[in-house]
Length: 204
Figure 1 (cartoon, rainbow, N blue to C red):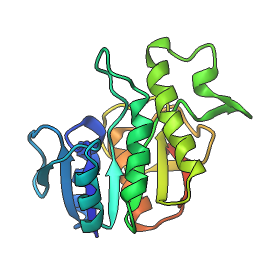
Figure 2: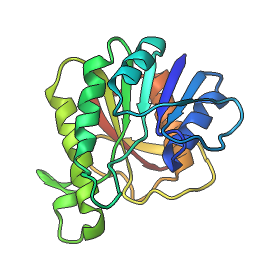
Figure 3: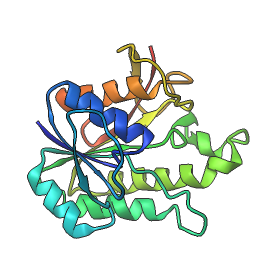
Figure 4: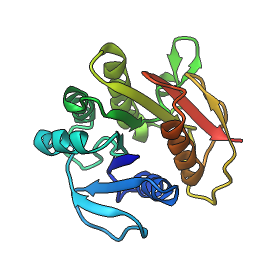
């Protein structure tokens, strides 16, 4: 399978691209800036904000993974992230979109998102609201074949175990390593179970 990973030099993107390559997929790792990547990955300069590049990549790949998150750069609007996902869905064509989302939109109780609870860390609130806006956009559109994967609230690096539990809109655990998250995401690409919906994973 031909898989493109935007944001492939970031923490999540790097392990996702590496896991896909380890399984024998044809992986293109895209980012705005080149960085050292695991063996087996082909790097290309690519910005999710560049509609022409995104459209070309969509035509050349079966699946597009977005491991980009909202901007954390001071002065930049984190809510532009939803517009990037909208732009991708408009040009994806037959390519499937898999979005690395956030945990803040998971529901702590019916109709109450984690991001809306008093204990949610203030420093992460804008980022969580921005990724939630991207999810709401995907749910409202009918152009793209998409999946949105939310990690458990705590998302550290760690050794891969291959063990994880799956849920939909409610947290199913407190944490999952980036490595096991990558395994879950590539499992979903290879054996789709959550088309046009969101799911979440946590350590098994």
